[in-house]
Length: 105
Image (cartoon, rainbow, N blue to C red; front, side, top):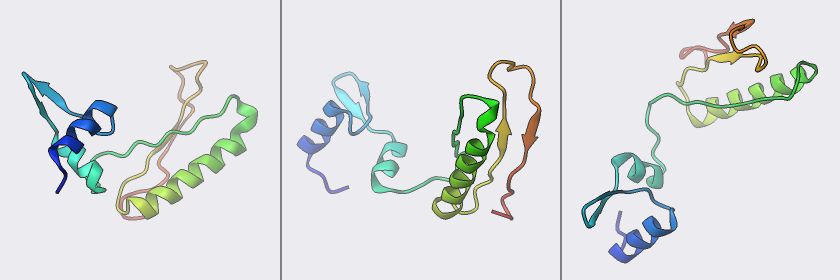
């Protein structure tokens, strides 16, 4: 990464960089280095939208559209699956809608 060891220590101390302590050493996971370098991996991408009640369904739909548009630009090729749950009845899932597929998004 081309950073001075003191910079790395300072970033770990302030929380800008995550590390795992092993004895007196700190180990930085590969995923953290990739994050700092702005490299995305192809693992699952989870986006979250919510509203307070059923009467706000148009707001929820608008949030989902914005998140899907962002994912299409920032993470092309990712599969997007939209599930809508009612928080009062978590056992009831009235909708489970596939909003896009890997090929279509």
